[in-house]
Image 1 (cartoon, helix red, strand yellow):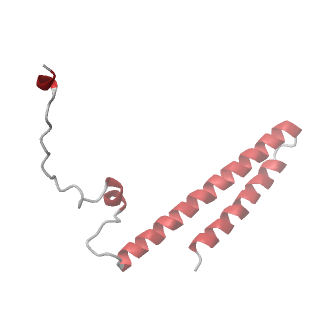
Image 2: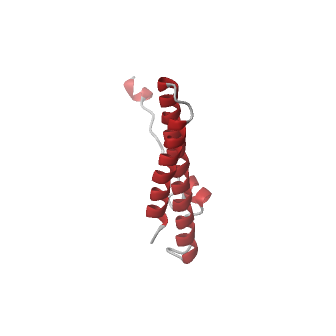
Image 3: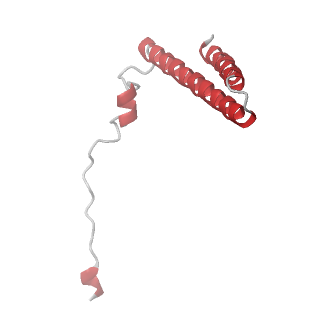
Length: 102
């Protein structure tokens, strides 16, 4: 009786997905027939620069937000917000130069 409940699984045919690049590699253009070409290196540098720019924007927003909160708490509106935005720009520029500079 138990033998009738056992279902044998047939091996699935190979679909060839092992050689196929992932969706992220296709989307970002990191999969190409050439192993390491100048185009891939330039593309990676552009993505590093874009990431550094996003870090800069987030840093400015974060420090300006903290400054705004400080202004709200202490009642000194615009000074801590301006100081926070300038501090965020300074930190963001440092990160941008550090990541993109050679």
